[in-house]
Length: 325
Image 1: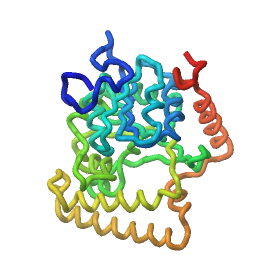
Image 2: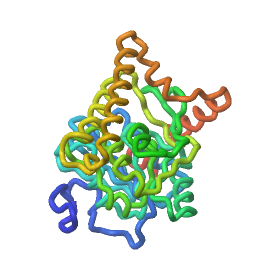
Image 3: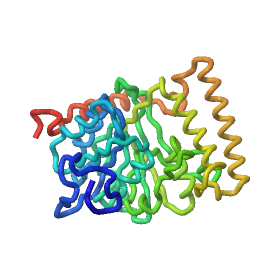
């Protein structure tokens, strides 16, 4: 990383594609931040979706989280002045890396996504336009398409209702985390909880903690393709919901300051929900755990989504594709 700044020594400048100190004459509007951990199989598709954006005033921060596969080689292969790569060889997990990205960001907005997500070409344009038109809004997400590891569309999902109470905010997040674009200053004021208790539920902890003090909105249009693998579904559900229970009763996080009655009610509801998930898993209704969260697309919608996804997956990446410039 840079020789000066808030994360001195965390990452080495020799591990970036270009010197992070060489600040461009004009900062980009959006910083796309991606933490990468052993994502060599999916990262090229994610990168194609970045270069397919109709909004071009972005920088891309690729922060490696101790990958042992070819992820770092893929990141370093990209040849574009808007891309910065950081490698320190450590495995810190999601929350610390997200906080690093926020401090490294040159853009006034930060766009979240994972290293197996694929952006719709208009994602950044529509979210930037929305935040420009609504200065009172801190965070804006979108609806999403659910795809399987073979890039087949499984349905779509949105969040149409804002939480009406702290209990509702604790049960259901107000925005799909991977779709979020937020003001960088907001992220810096509202850092992710890096404690072990919040691991695997960093986003839920953030939204629950900031309920009532931040303005969060979500667009109804699906603008991100999110990979959901039935083989990993139960593991993720178990770890995220166990994390929710931990942050409410263990450690010293801000969530522990919420009213005890609210936390106890949430704990009971989460335990009931997990019992239902375990029952579905035990009887073999595994795909159902994904399908129940998604809405079906009609024939025309499915065809349009598949066409867009195919278009993105053909988008060239300079350096990754030798013929691209």
